[in-house]
Image (cartoon, rainbow, N blue to C red; front, side, top):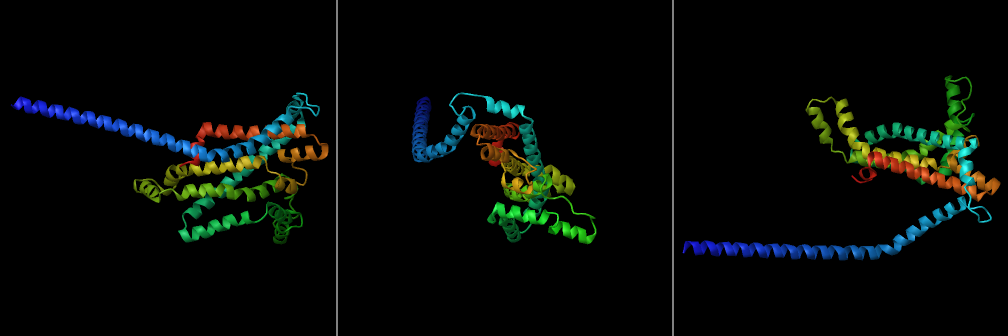
Length: 312
């Protein structure tokens, strides 16, 4: 009798287990089917806008690329690219472009990181006011801000007059119409682009982690460098990428504050079209600039992982 009861219980358990497995299989198949349908619906809804974006982005790039390898008569040529890498003028332009872009990025980091750290430690009310002050330059035209710096930095400008009146210098400093003026103006314009992602990254850091590090024996300086700084790296690198890539193709500020003495790639492209009407050479410069930007992004992705920089 006992054996019959045990056997019946075993059969009942096996049946329940079999039914449970079948139910899980049915639920899994149903979830998979619903997931596929949802993805298909989302793809159908986003497909028109995606195609428009791809056309708007790819069409000019393809047109530009075709101009860089075709002569005015329509024949294939690599002359424009050969000229870029064999001409001392173009090589110097590349060197100046990277020199300015790297300098602007470094100065933005040196100025932006302490500022972001200070703002992130403020109470919410004052931090919001400080961020509004950071964003105010966005409401003013880049051209207006560049001319304002031109007024400040020229030989009889406010900065030189103040330094002369205080006796700190004996003659006006050459701050405009050179590399120095271009870097100063670009740092002012690019700084908010580094501050925004960096501030968001710092604001998300839990302050208890730093306090816990101090309570476990670290000094405040060690806690800052070993806890706070590594956790702020995603925002910092995101800002560095934005500033450096945008600096590579900057035009207005170096054109005005450089006074014609500083030639970046964007200015070289403009002068090639304006003075020589050579669309092929200008297109080749544009393609090279695009490839450089993509190469920088790829190198940063391989080194740091851009998915970790922009998605926390």
